[in-house]
Length: 263
Image (cartoon, rainbow, N blue to C red; front, side, top):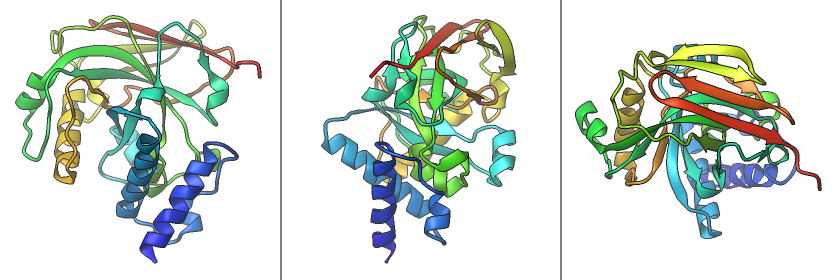
C-alpha cells in the first residue's frame, strides 16, 4: 500500500509539470510522511535522470526560523538541482515554464572537493568550498496556491524551480557570511533586505547539515556541484516582465530578468 501511494503521488507530480497544479498530496493521501515524501522526490529524480537529466547540486530550504514556524517544523529540507534548472545571468528566463514562481536571494557554494557525511564538521565543509557566488533561486510549486506542508514540499523536490548564478565567483570565506548583508531589488526598487545569519545562523551550517543528512543515504556532494543553502529574505512572486537583482556585501550582485516567450 505504501509503495502504491508513493507511485501514485510521483505520477501526479510528474504530470503536474505538464499540466495543471494539483491539490496537496497530504490531502490526497492522508498519513503521507516525510519519509514517504523523500521517496517520492527520489523517484522523480530517477525518472528525470533516466531521461537524460543530470544532477548538478542540491538546495536546502526552510532554513529560516520564520519559514520553520510557518510550516511547524524544526529542521530544513533539501531538493535536487538538475542541469535544466540553471539559467544564465542577464539572459531572459521564460516565466511560462513555471507555475507560480517566487524568487529568493542566496549565497551559493560551488564545491571544489567532494563532501560526504556523516560526521562532516564546519571546518571540513569550508575546506571543500571552492567559490561562493551570489545567486537567485526560483522556487516553484506544483501544489495549488502554495498550500503546502513539509511533506508536500519535500515530495515536490523542495519546491525547486531554477537558479541564476552571478558572474563573480569569490574566494570562499573572505568575508564573514553570517554578517553578509543582502539588498533585493524588484524592477529597481528595494523590496527586501537580509543577512547571512538568517540561514541557519550561517550558510555554512546549512552546508554541513546537508552533507550529514544525505551522506547516510549514499549521496555524495560532488566537486563542481552547486549548493543553495537557503534564502536571506522572504520569497517574492515573479511575473512576466520582472527584473530582480540581489546585491551581497563583499560578494557581488546577480540579476535575473523574466519574459514570457511567445508560443
